[in-house]
Length: 629
Ligand code: GLU
Image 1 (cartoon, helix red, strand yellow):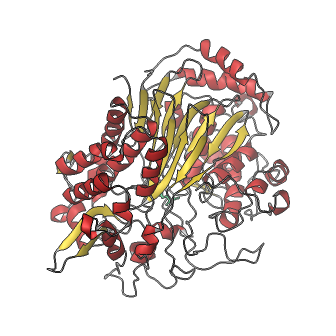
Image 2 (cartoon, protein in one colour; image 1 turned 90 degrees about the vertical axis):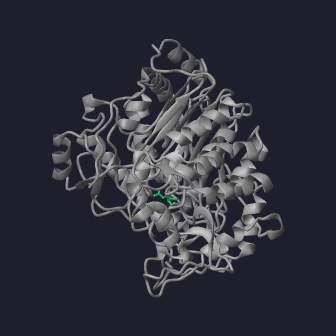
Image 3 (cartoon, helix red, strand yellow; image 1 turned 135 degrees about the horizontal axis):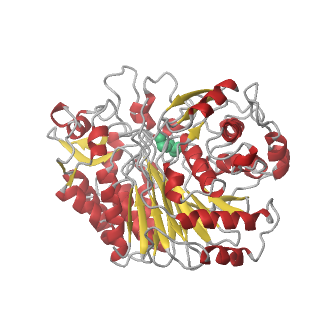
């Protein structure tokens, strides 16, 4: 059991409460799936003008990152003329250096972008893919599969971020990489969190990683200098030659990173006889293509909520929960609801159980399987299924998946594509979420990961002819263990499980980069979280805190969270709920365990004045930098 005392509100933003309140009032007239009222913006204007603004407001951009060096990298790029996309890419690379256990160029993620000029919102999907030779049974009988080379997916971050810069950035890759190169080359003072999570069993899976993360056999001391010269050299290669230097073996140019990945993922864990290397080859790497995907969106009390489409289960699960909950007045304490009441957590818990039942069977990579995205959010389907939630009772027996197909459209795609090993619980050490807004109002909500802490615990690299190790300085992901670990059958369709391994397929994710828009469609908040399947619930908790409980954003992040990521009655919750609530939940037949959940970073914009705000999570080393400083 790990706990973190709730921090005081770092940047109280009372305006957010008032804005949410007024928008909520405006939105009630606009509920359901009817077209949004055209006067939504007018309602927003009135609400915002009357709000007593407090807390730091900025005009030239804000970054909210789970690490101070990452935040600084993003702020510097904004100050040097970069836009939110440039800053986000700079942050992602910098975090590879300073938060290497969480994410980096050996992995992938989802970068949701809102462009102020066009009003478009979309996501660049850099999720890892299975190699062409991958098979549904490739994990069967493999001990500690998530620590073996067979778990490594084809990394997507480098090509996806290069695409983002080419299409939507203002600065060249080589400039955007400078903060990360400097951090790797000159080093940084280990933060308390870096020191605390550096040396663990995963990071000691290979000798090179053990030497780096547990120097001298022990965790580095906070404040000590951490340098990663091999990573600096890798980043310089990418800066000089572009993304192809990562994906193609071109020794004439000095581009040998692809060789380091292909050789590295052959890792066969010596500690576990029967271990298994991966099948990735140069063609798999060369063939990696990021996707640009439309988000999945729905209204919630009139707000437009947009979040990550498949291969993530994030949007579909979170939006389904919101739709289940929309009929309960969660903010109204006079009716027994309100933040942290038994009644509120009761309906939240059962909404989670229902949605996670559907998630377990219907969600996967929609480029490969027919995810019934429309049916899962269809008002009739949601209404029928959600009727099982009855305040004052616990849903029994445990829910099973429903059948949304009659409510779907044959061949329906959740969005245009232009181009059961559940992850760990709690905030843990892995995955990272950051949010950015720039002076133009462009916003980015980016969740990035190598799956488990330190991935497979192996650096990309290969053994030279002289026996020395050519180290590329970044960790390889274990993302493929987000697939079902053994072949399954979808009991409704009779076909292989939607999240079974298939060649070139992306494993189902829980990452839920999200954005909230006014009823009139203007951006308000960009946010998201790490935390495995709990990600979806962290984003749900913060959404309810903002819209129903009308909390300022920092309070919405600080508030204790609740999570169920399955169909059972065991609730994970954070410290801070009243004893009477816990007793009330036990009386309804739930059990609970106390743990930390998630790490949310958010940026906000006042849609009328353009003033910008940020909020970050003290569960990790959340840092907000607003500009001008
Ligand atoms: N690999 C996980 C996912 O895509 C994220 C890992 C985590 O946050 O623990 O859902």
